[in-house]
Amino acid sequence: MLSVLSMLSSFELFKIGLGPSSSHTTGPMKAALRFVQFLEVQGQGREVTTLDVCLYGSLGLTGGGHHTDRAILLGLSGQKPEVLEPASADVIITQISQTGTLMLGGNTKISFDSKTNIRFEGQTSLPFHTNAMRFSAFDAKGDLIASRIYYSVGGGFVVDEDEAGRNAPDAADVIPVHAFSNAQELLECADAAGLTIAQVMLENECVHRPRAEVLSGLDDIWGHMHACMEHGLAREGMLPGALRVRRRAPGLYTKLRVQNPDPKQSCERSDWVNLWAMAVNEENASGGRVVTAPTNGAAGVLPAVINYYLYFVPGATDAGVRTFLLTAAAIGGLYKRNASISGAEVGCQGEVGVACSMAAGALAAVLGGSNAQIENAAEIGMEHNLGMTCDPVGGLVQIPCIERNAFGATMAIQAARLALLGDGTHAISLDEVIKTMFETGRDMSTKYKETSQGGLAVNIVEC
Ligand code: SF4
Image 1: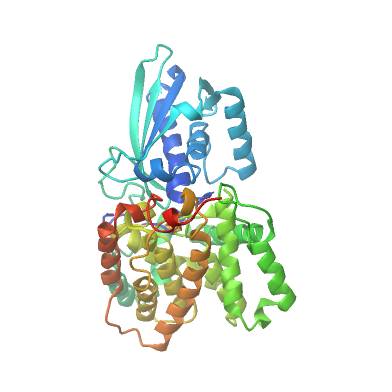
Image 2 (image 1 turned 135 degrees about the vertical axis):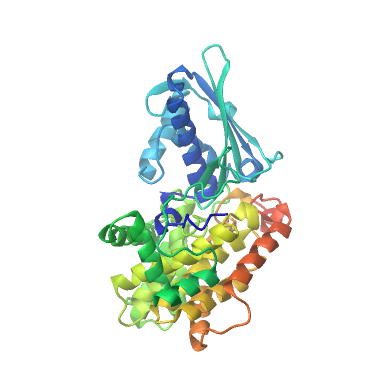
């Protein structure tokens, strides 16, 4: 858990990366890059002639479908998920497989065959977290020169073996203006300062960077979310993988525009919300550029609800989108701090469930809700996702993930509207539901935590 002094920034929660998974793609890519940087710091980078990578637990069981092996190759090649273009990734992967060599960190040629140098050991779990990786580097004599373990703990966050279990591994060590460790403290410090939740977050963000940079950074996050949605609406064809799932968003988009070219005039707003969410998650499933919110698998919920706000709420503004993102980040940070946003640790309630909770609270904020109503909306958004399992068919982030984002988005809108009909008082607090989600996740069988060993994953016949 994070210490009070280390608040999670919006820019740590909303990370730009490649699909299909923040924990199984973005995280492993970052871990591989960190190992390369570790070798360089130790002065060992140029001694390496080959490497072995072991993927344990959930990474070992579903890493194939989640492109974990590709992500490892890209990270070892010195690539960063936030800047690498999907097309460039394809070029690098092709070169490695054709030449049997890899440019470690972009500058040292080593021999590498992903079929033998990456091992999927799903039956072995390391104690700290199920998403574990071990990187081992060897010199020309075949002697081991360095070995490190990394954990991908959800949402693209990575810790190494020294950081595991320590507080605030990824957070900047800067004292925030408003320190809070749970929803109750967040409400109390916001009320004491006479601020909204978004304003509390904004003041905390401004400790790290100038206000203008924070605002433009938030605009950039929304820009990347929107671009991802646009790509998903335009790209026809099949998604990668043995399931042969056809992209549905472009056809649905055409159909809805025939019925009514302007979403604002449409009677069936939920059709558009479903479409926007699915467009993002089809793009994610194809390895496209995605913003974690709070994960890649759940990346469609927030953009779809933001579009709902922009299209269907009179007077919606760019400033409102920033308020939305700041409020959502405050809520998402509470889950990251006090529970988990890893499907491999707590099931899909920690991914689409958390995204639904974040979007519900954020929508309540931009619809004029009080801080108490925002907290209520976030609580409702999670309460009805409790117990939701993670059982991706074929280890691919496609079924049930793509449609599930559509349901997460529409449920978030209902949660916000329900909360706004009340005055913010309610029986179950957000802190209580976060605690319940974490405990439910711990009690959940491993079969239902991103292992593809239970649920839909074993009841669908692959063609
Ligand atoms: S079922 Fe949910 S948690 Fe699991 S891979 Fe799909 S979106 Fe992620």
